[in-house]
Image (tube, rainbow, N blue to C red):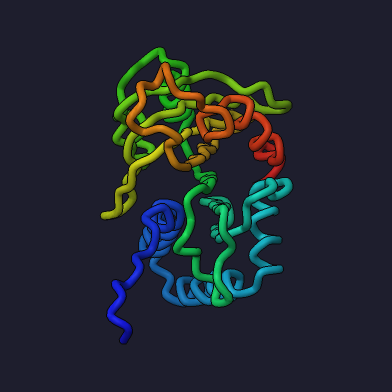
Amino acid sequence: MNGEPKKKTSPWVYVGIGCGVALLLAVLAVVGVGVLAVRKGKQIEAEMKDPVAREAKVREVLGGDIPPGYYPVVSISIPLLMNMAMLGDHPPDAKGAPSKELERGFVYVNTLATGGQQDELKRYFEGKVDDPEALRRANIHIDAKETIRRGALDLPGQETLYLAQRGSLAMDKHRTEGLTTLIFIDCPADTRQRMGIWFGPDPSPDTAVESVDWSGSVADESAMREFMGHFKLCGGK
């Protein structure tokens, strides 16, 4: 041993993959099919280790291209129930493990939902209600300190609302500080819950929101529009 402290995995890794993995395990537990669980686990492991398969699966779920500067990290699918894909600003290692240097990323989760849940989330993103319980009921745990901005992105074939915030994002027992932009995707004649979380560092964490130049950050609306324009989430799974 060289005496150097062991470098911890970036908490963003757990934020990104925790949601999909936790949901996967919960679904399999409810289904109660051990063989399915084993097969699905082996399939996910194989796809994570194979960069070609990993990229193909992520592209399939996102229905588009990988934005410049990002790499496919992981994708999990359970037919009809859930699809999840994650991108990061560093590629996984040779064994498919997410990079410890991950700072920016995007998590997309598509699950079954009721029309009532969709309506509640939409009202929250539109600012008509200011009750964070709407997010928690959708299994999104955000401890927002400051709202930077909210709005809508003009993207073809879907209604896309966003909420950019400073604060912490928690998944399982892991919590991290930075910027999180929650993205609500409403597809025509579709009651599935489609949510994106684009996360990244705060360019000036000690500066008041109104004094920060957000250009190029995950809170920059033009950057959001360009980034989300790479995907066709209403045409994918």
